Amino acid sequence: MTISVLNASIPQHKYGHVCAEILYGMDESRIGTFEPCVIFGITSIPSRALHFSILCESGAQWARIPLHLLRHTLPEKDAPVHPLYELQHWDAFSYEFGIVQYQFLREMACKFVRTDRTWVPASYWFTLDHINNGFSDYPPEHKCYHILLCEDGSGQIAAQPNNRIIWNDKSFVKPNHPLDYRVMSEDTWHAEHRPESSHVNPQDTAITQES
Image (cartoon, rainbow, N blue to C red; front, side, top):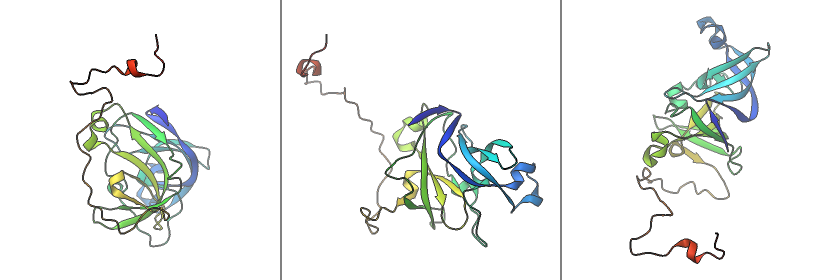
């Protein structure tokens, strides 16, 4: 995992497209048109959606392109266009974050749930997890962001937490398993917290005692 502040490189840059209106001052006449780009960086600013850095075919490099104005592939005709609040339900918690691409999840198929309880098929790209803030340190409110590539023809990119995703590992996942889990409890666990009646010092029972 790479720990970053504000900006970070993306594991494995991706060739995609950017919605042209963001390149022309949000010119409404450009809506529905796209320019090829390379998506190579990500930006985290508290209380804002995730943003990305791109390189255009013109040689222009843009920073802070919002999530919903990128496409990992050109959209298909009559494909849905998901609003930003469906692609990312929670704004960033912090300037500080870690980036990792879990090898077990790499390119794994999945689906995430929209607010209307319909599902969007997708595949895994990488994960962003914030650090050094009260939300991430409090178990019931912690949210990591799995960056997903929508596979419903929209070509869009989503940032979804664990509790809105079902993964499709055919060799392990049982599709009909009941989903009746609850939010993580407030408990935290600490190796050094021991019952008052226990007076054994771990150093005294180690194989080799350090000086």
